[in-house]
Length: 178
Image (spheres, rainbow, N blue to C red):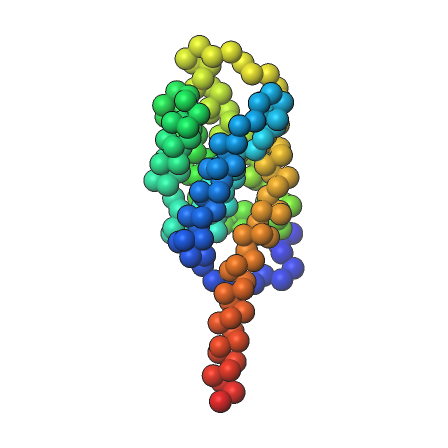
């Protein structure tokens, strides 16, 4: 079922997109350990999916690759595993973009769950291929938590775009009334 009130929003500014991606990187780099580390969602992957769906001209596969390399360096893991996972996830989000946008935020969360899960599976297979141990089934819980955050994150990231639209509408109304 589609959203009840489809609204047009202004494109997000490049600075806003960059700010959100930097904040996501910082959230990913928080020094968690143990169970919290396993359950902590991958905020860069989550925001990549969001921006690929909502701003495909601004964020694409190159950005996904670059952010993946940054995460590889920051985590000190096999170079390229995040880059490969993020790029394939972003590619699939681009393909599914028209379909995902038809649904409500909670229905979109199911697609986001699949995309985040694919990213985790790609990283896991890469690690296992190079001799790492299987981290256990809780490894996949972060994709479920990330998809549960999707509706809130989507609404939060749309606020500045609606605010810009309201300002433009107010300006147009003032000019039209003169």
